[in-house]
Length: 512
Image (cartoon, rainbow, N blue to C red):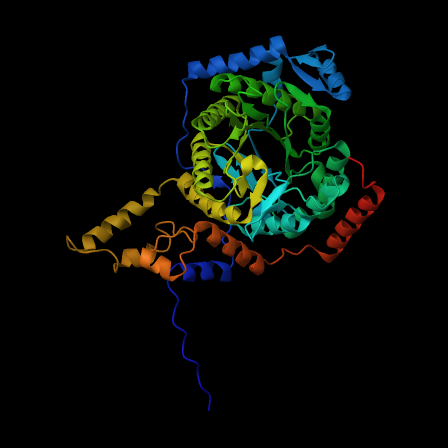
């Protein structure tokens, strides 16, 4: 005689939704196809004034390209060169940037994770560059390679993250000389989404590119974009050899670059929103123009990273209204230039996952969404003005990005007629909870957060009175426990391991 075990009761509420999410295949989100209008913050005439100011800076003041090889390239292109100072005619700049594509696609090793950006498309990416982490014991400490691997896994598992990322944190337990090898290896192994390469020297860029070639095929990466890497201008008005060498390496293989002045408004730019934008736009356009000298048609992303500076202390600030204004102005200029553009998203100056961290990140991201950025860096985990990466905030921000994604998609007018039918089904004063329409749509009609608590106080208190930071930590532990590696072919992984290990053996540990 056989017996059948009684069916377990169905779990309900947030815990059930959380369990369902981690028990099923993740529904990764494609790049956001924007369904809401842009916010154009100035008139066309005012935008023309800012454009003219940027062109005037490039023509009259000029910009330093502190690299002999790059200077020779500018001379050959007919630019006015005095030492390292390059002065560019506006017609020349506009001609060069016109060869950059307005949209491009990044191939992933899993084709389902390939993404396009530019136009009305947006990708969200993790935070970049923090030397510290706020760990799962809520302690601030130096980041390690284990943390880096963990954040690579979290970014892979997060449905709204469209890239593996770049310097997810700085693994301080790995010597600088070959830190890039470990990071690139991790991004290629633990995620199958597009990635960012090293830009801290020509050799490191070449080695990152070689590792991409092992995974994608060396012939493939000669022309097919699989990465988008960072090129920071040293504001005010300097492109240095390190960044220019990286541009030359990646551009020669048609890999995309982000031309992003690292702007501290009021310190490295004039203490003026429109003045800051005029300067950073000149810097970014000069970078895009240079990449087009290296390889016409290579994907070049215009944009910036901006914080304002507290004039009473010099400390960088996130979440201020001027950052929103700058993003909106840069977005409007990008559409004028027909270039994809980048900014940073969930940024905060807070030291903890607290109210400040939440409202600064939300203010920044809402402004970014309204401005229409195509490449949003640092959407998850960012604390201390990029000095610290938080496990908890990475999870909380990931959920926020799914909500931002829903906001950016706009409304679906196809829902109106079925909703009207539902209205006709009930009597005035009745409710919709049992209607066929509600039963068919309750899981998708409205976003149902897992980490934001909406329970009655009594239920929340009975369940331990857990705050958002603790919920984020617990979710990070859960996601890492449930992580499944997107396997590389054994031979490919062996070749990747061998290359990393050989380069580490060849590079002196104390070299910088």
